[in-house]
Amino acid sequence: MVALTYALGAGLWLAGSEVLLRMASSAVPALLMRFGSGVALVSVGSVLIYLLVARMATARERERKLTQALAEAHEHMLAGWSRALDLRDHETEGHSARVTALAVRLAVAMGLSGEEIEHIRRGAMLHDIGKIGVPDAILRKPGPLAEEEWAVMRRHPEFAYAMLAPIAELGPVLDIPYCHHERWDGSGYPRGLAGEHIPLAARIFAVVDVWDALCSDRPYRAAWPRERVLSYLRAHAGGLFDPEVVRAFTRLIESERRATATPCRRVA
Image (tube, rainbow, N blue to C red; front, side, top):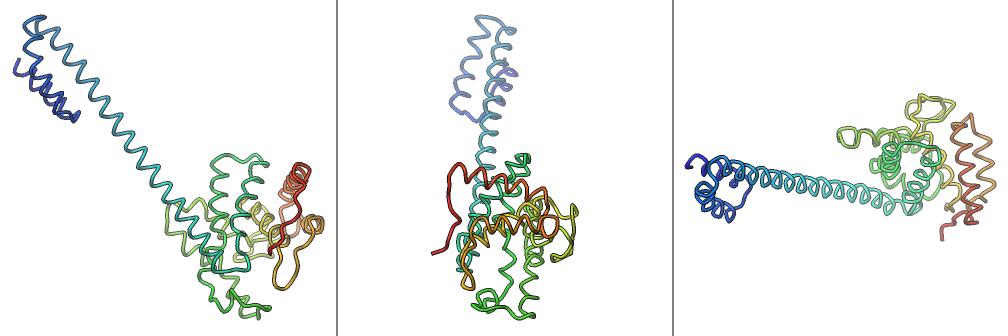
């Protein structure tokens, strides 16, 4: 009986219930007297199993909540970075949110997996994170950039890689911040990748990024009409852009236009 009581006590201690420990300790002698050691052992064993399983379930729930809290904190951090960039560069304010939403819709339309779509979403949020390394005098210059200033501006994908690559959790999202200025014909930067050597996420985002830029007003030009932007993308499919992505994008835009008839956005 003493051994049985200790076993029960140990199990209940692991289960974390002092009240149940006291109750079970007083119940063991009664079980032994009425039913004998076999029934008492089975009864105590059942209680122990139940309580240990309950404790494990509680631990798993705590772990799930912690994981969820960390994921939410991580998401808020990415959104904060994206918003900070928009606030720093007033010319493109709201751009990150728009291209993120559109890139996700295009990825869905192209049949990418849920995991791939999530990487695209997060990569799109951070696509211009490397501009943190570009001086304000260049980033916010109202007129055309000089060649040496363009040389600095073109380094922002490299700055993005330097910032994000050491963060293991962000490894899968690097394709867009690092490669979205690569071009299908190899004329892009920073590495001059061509064709399918460019990650698909970056090829998708390149089309979306140019669409949003041309559909928005800039200090140096007015927003283009929707049809002119589509014509531009089609004209450069197979040159600047992946032709399959351009075809999928065109179908998406035309489908959404039929559904909503929403004109190109103009910045006030």
